[in-house]
Image (cartoon, rainbow, N blue to C red):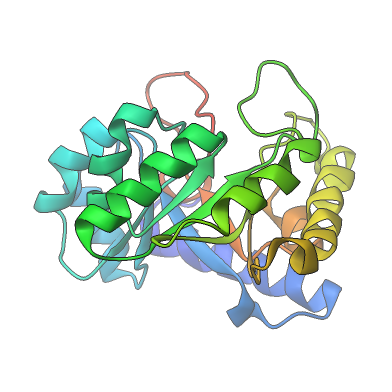
Length: 237
């Protein structure tokens, strides 16, 4: 891995461009979300100075402390598992939540949006792999969620998010990304929402995710380098 953030970012952008060329897409259709869990405000500033504007956090408490110390004008997304009792604060801190996985959380975010006087943007987290160890809605639960969401006035479902199993070969998880894209197409008419966003792909598999339609890739290690802790984040890599 190259040494400076700007060099790593340039390499990532080249890889995104190549993946887009391979799949006949415009690189501008893919947004880099810098997954900044455990990164200090100085690292956020460095990334922002290199042109990144979209950042993702896994925990409300960390974001609460970090965002005020980071450059202004950035867009912050919640990408980790969100507890219902944190919905109000998350809606205040973040412009989008990627990890909505229950009717109760959907309703809590809608109520928070009403209190904040805005429409909260969310992605539904879909557990396409069916792994019991992962958060996310089973695909068969989505129709009822969309029905509920259509009755809420301060919430918009902007897309879908997924986290596939970890695999040595990224091609081994390609079908999970393709499945999410197919579900998006299936649900567009059913849901009443455009579902423009597909939040999928992390440091180890983002090129395959892009080839299968990702619009947001959540990148941590490939941009910031490996953290000292070996804990694997649940929503980014």
